[in-house]
Image (cartoon, rainbow, N blue to C red; front, top):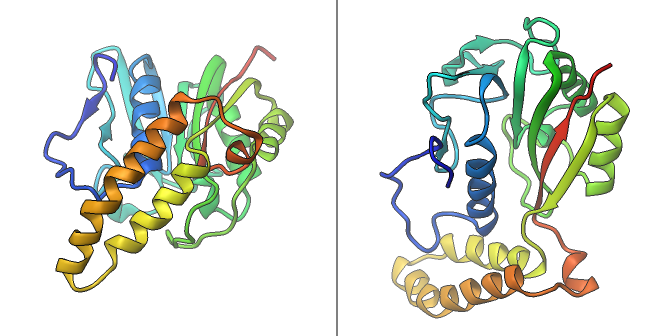
Length: 232
């Protein structure tokens, strides 16, 4: 984690509590957010019950504003993520994590991110792919890396880099982890976890270190994107 990027130290780390993709997403966010400065608009962000372990950096050179249509999550700005009140080209960065799957018109959200970014500004984006359906408040779609790149370029972004967050073994491990976490009684769940978790950990570590085969690479847990707005 880069200096200046905060993580909750009170998060209890138990084997079945956090998905492998979430751990990868937290690492990617920590690295990307540690270098941000100026005004950051967090589309769909929230201060209450913020998922994951990464928290916005607290620095004098950075102002982080959460924009969310749900006032219950205590955002700084209560507004539609696809049509907020922010001025054109006002932001140095836009963060949009785990949001696109929950909106009916993702392209409008990407166009809004492009609109509020100043020239050279960065969009940091994440989206699940092979993940369970989860309402927040609704779950509408999953996109491949090809689709994400095409949409970002269509609304004006350039230098689009889409990174896979977990391949075949991460997908498999998260499916097993999710199933184990819901087993009852607890004694059976933890007995199986003691055997399964070390194997799942090894498979995911091996996947991250080895050059993937075409089969392994064809399964993706999710995507992490960094895209730039160039001068018009």
